[in-house]
Image 1 (tube, rainbow, N blue to C red):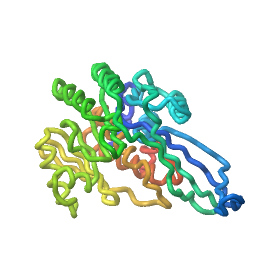
Image 2 (image 1 turned 60 degrees about the vertical axis):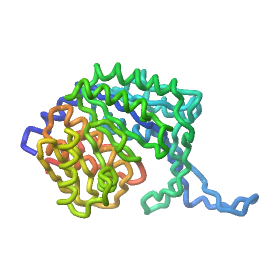
Image 3 (image 1 turned 135 degrees about the vertical axis):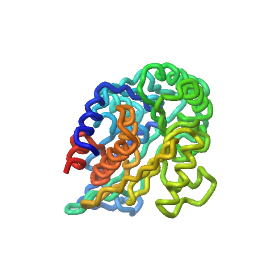
Image 4 (image 1 turned 90 degrees about the vertical axis):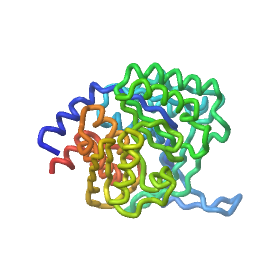
Length: 339
């Protein structure tokens, strides 16, 4: 990145307004003290003694955490939670984050709060080790009334924000925020405003999504194009370029240890290598940091390669934060990119 461009791009972050629509969940960590060993008298099974519990927004909330860490001026979460204890914690956590406006985040008696319960085995001298998760999810379709609230929020925000991020975290169609009705609303928005920046990522794949900026890994790219995942960097670039031209929107593909590439509709193809590993890593949250940083940088006028470089640096910072779903600040990015 050319000297001066990093502060020029990130200097605009405080004035940006970004909406984030998707599946917000609560990441609840249970830290288990390995030294307090006990056997249950009733079952004869080992007891895990929890000595600390911490919670933070997860799912789409991980992207939000990263936007906050970057100092984005105004962030609008668009989604829902249940009217339950986990929902109370999630709303409280969102309310404590700088720049977050929660008037389009809807608690509902007809939903349970999507929750990832993460037991962490804490042993002196060892990195935290995550045990089997305990998840709380919704298994029935999102009520029509709640879908309508989400659609109305997106129509309002499309006139107010610089960019919109879409994140689908659920694996069962129609049970989350980005159902068919909501995606149709997004389609209507981007059809009438072709230059509006909208970036999408989905655990289930982007087959049903409108033509917006796509961010995905190689497995998801192959599935979207009805073929095997690309086996080489060159093959991934060829497929991504074809998709970008077909959709008329940029495509970003994450490549794990090979970094990431971006293909623009005009045929431009950029590849940014991954940063070297600097110690123990935890890849949880890396993809969400990429999504946040791509959107922030592109909203601030960064060129495609510059946005990829910032996103790659953020992912490198995050994977070295073990035992938590991490974030990267502008200062973190500067420390890595200006060495």
